[in-house]
Structures are given as C-alpha cells and as structure tokens.
Length: 114
Length: 117
Image (cartoon, rainbow over all chains, first blue to last red):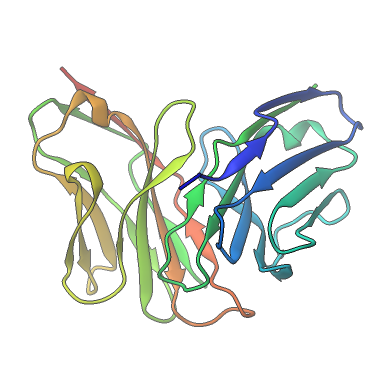
C-alpha cells in the first residue's frame, strides 16, 4: 500500500512570510496527525483529526498556525506569519481510529525560517 | 497527565553485543506503549507495541521490548546489535482513558543508538 505522502520536502522562507504543507494519509485511515519535530527533540503533536473533525489542537499556536482536513482525506498545515523558532521538521502521520493502532509517518517537511 | 522519559540521550554498543534502550512512562489509566525508529533523512517507522497480554513483545528487525508495570518501564532490547541498527529511537505512550474523543500520543525525546563495528 502507498505510504503517507508529504510535500514539499524542504522549504526555506524568511520570517513573517507564510508557508503551507500538504499531507495525504494512507487510504482508509481515519486519524491524521501533524507533529513538529525540533532538532534534538521528540515529535510534538500540533493537531489531530478524526475524519474531518479536530480532536486535539491544544498545542497548536492558533495565532499563527492553522490546519484543515476538509473532506476527511488529505490535509494542509499553514503558518502565517512564520517566526525563526518555527524552523523544524513537520511530520504528518495517519492511523486507524483505535487507540492501539500504530501511526504511519510521512517523510516530513524540513522548514528553515531565516 | 501522561509523560514518557528516555533517560539516555545516546547508547553506544559494539556489533554483536546485546542492546537496551530505556523508557519509562506515566499515565492515569492503562498504557498503550510504542517504539518507533528514525533513520537519517527518513520518517519515523513503527517497531513494536504493547497493548495487553504477554509482557514481552516482539517487533520488526529482531527487536523486542519488555513491559514492566511495577517499574512503569518499556525498555527496547535486541540480543545482537547490527551496525545498521544505528538510528534514533523514540518511545511513545497513549493513555487508555479517552481524551476529548481521541487518544493523545506523547513521544519521548529520543535516544540515539550507535553500533560500532
């Protein structure tokens, strides 16, 4: 089966600019996650969708970050405006809806904010 | 509140020797525990999980992990390390108690494993 797809793989922008990332999960996976992974740290959950509804966005900086999964399939994560501290790898993952389902991760998007 | 700790930033082991990567956790309910591996320039890959039942679980690439409820630990092990096992390993935990309709996963900070030939 096809894995989780993400694009772009790399992005370099200047602070205060905007950027968007795209994710296409594994077909049939109800749950989609966006994580931020700063160098040397573990992934931090930004937002979790179950189908097209948000079930957890408690750590999403909502003044600058937004995400949507309109049709319950693919998703976009946007940052506007970007700050230097947003430099990180943004990982998308998907899984089945049950808590014992493991997550499948995409290759990530490496964002550099100058 | 749930949390997970990986006390070692780095583990060094010689090829052919056994390896252990440590993980401890804290949850309110029963834990669902996972190990993931991240090879350079690649996304995280699932290795194994503990949900219930036998405390020793086996996973991909010859890895296994032992769940210890009294010590709240879930250490990753392999009897004989390979150079190709060198990677970043993450322990993750979910609390079985429902959380706002979803199940939040908390990842540890990661442990870098170096296997020397």
